Image (cartoon, rainbow, N blue to C red):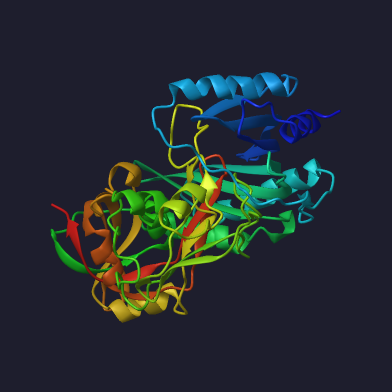
Length: 451
């Protein structure tokens, strides 16, 4: 009998001391190859399995193990005993739907082709090396990953999903006039042959060119074009504004504003279980609730939130399938259930970056941003983000500038979106548990602090 069958057996015959219980299993197998400076320098493989258990009696207790041979009864008992140390009084509500075992058929179910991965990495390195004569070193990493997830509970819920994907990153170092610069680009895909070589060339070349020979700029209010990677970096933290838990307890700057206008008509945000620009897809969350597309902002109006079972019950609505564990970086094992996105992204528009720059005329193109996790306050919406970019004159790039900080409030930023670009970029985040994306955004005015 497999370890999971052991848990299924226990959940069907819970001891009387348990009122309900849930088991969430996450298994990952990955193979990483790294090609650098003309050589294959690393090939490594790993497999991990994590079991998260919730048991409800007078209070909800949690347990965690990576030992698949550990006796299921013992793990559940450990969770029950741990409930004594849980500070909050209310119990978690587990998924009460009885769902017969459902298996996702979206996996490739094919053998890993390491020679093809190595060939793809070599080709990508050769392609990127041609974009800039200042490049001194290149590293390409391709990770092939197979993920399998199960959620089983004592109500009869039993769901399973699998996902196969490739994550590809190219990182370069360049030297010019005694200075060093770095640039990277990432994408994920379901098939190696879908790696967009031209996009890697375009993005890495642009990233380097926007850093060279940078000067200073005067502080002021400017019309600004935020690059798609910059908006994505902002959304890596800002998605928490749409958490039903934060909305409900008043710790989101959007609390109390459901149904109200908070942005311009050009600004919309969606959380989706899948997207054509990434190999990621999510059939259900870690409570077993089916994933669905949820529009959060529609034409500037706040129309939805991301919910797990707890936040949905608190606000008298239904879960949107956004139960997760890994919100931000943490040194502890995240057994507790929180809210995380699936693939949350700002909706793209129809205009190219060149068209947006021409429309802007005079202003600043912010091409890089840094340290967004410590630079955004979700409760107030305030932000102060270190960045750099390029001055735009008459719709054309004039000179690069660095040592900048953009500051303001997220609600003001959303309300000042004049147009969204057609260059949607999606990036994985934290343990590959969700994705965040955005296109470039033309902002009517933004405070930029320089010298």
